Image 1 (cartoon, rainbow, N blue to C red):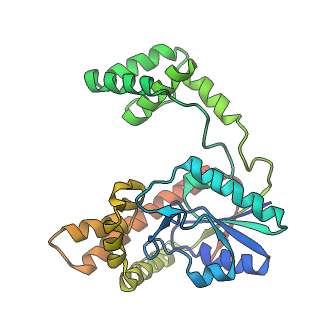
Image 2: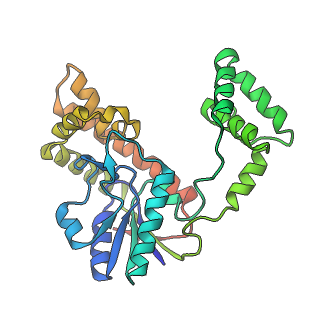
Length: 290
C-alpha cells in the first residue's frame, strides 16, 4: 500500500504527512522534483534536519544542483526506497506535488525505446534545413491512420518522428504499447489524499512563505548555487523562486519587494496549473480541506 499525499504548493501537505508518518510508523518518499538537489533548501521549503530526524526521508539531496536528474533516475530511486521501506514492515508516505513525478506511481512514465544518435541527428538536420513543415510531412506519411500529436509543437513533433523511425512503428502503436507496460508500483494499492484550501487562504500562505524565504536567506542561497554552476541545470535554475532571484541579481533594480511580488505572482500561476493537473490527471482520490 502506498499512502500518497499531494496538493498544490504551500497547501500544507508536508506538515500533515510528517505528523501522519510519525503516528503510523511510516517513512517518506519525496515526490518533489527540486528536493533532489543539494543546496536548494530555502526556495524549495525542503524538510529541515529536525523534520528528517523525526521521520526518515528518501529522495532528498541526491545530487549537486548543477547536475540534472531525469525521471528515469527518479523512478529507480523511488522503486528502491519503496521496496526497502516495505521490506522492513513500515508504511510508505509519498509526498509531493510534481505532477509528472507523481504520475510515476500510477502509470508508466519511462519506456525502453532508445533512439540511435544517427536518427536523432538526421531528424534534427532535416528540421534545421527545411523547418517544421518537412518534419510534419514525414511524420504524416508514417502515420496514415492519423495523429494525436500537437503538430504546432516542434519538440513533440521532432520526438514523435525520431521514435517512429527508431521503432518502425506508428505513433498510435507506440502509445498503445507504452500504456500497457508494467511499471514498478502497478501491483500496489494506493490511498491518495489531495489537500486543498480556499483560494484566499492559499494566497495568504504563499505571501507569508515567500517573505519568510527572503528573510531566511533565499538570495544568499541563489548566490551560492550560482558559484556551484547550477545555471547549467535548467530544471533547477528555472524553478520558481530561483529564476526570479537570478534575474533580480543580474538587474539594476535591487528592490526586494519587487522580487517578492515576482515570486508570489509566479507561484500563484503555478498553483493554478497544479490544480488543473490534479483535476484532470490525478487518479481516484479523497480531498482533504485544510
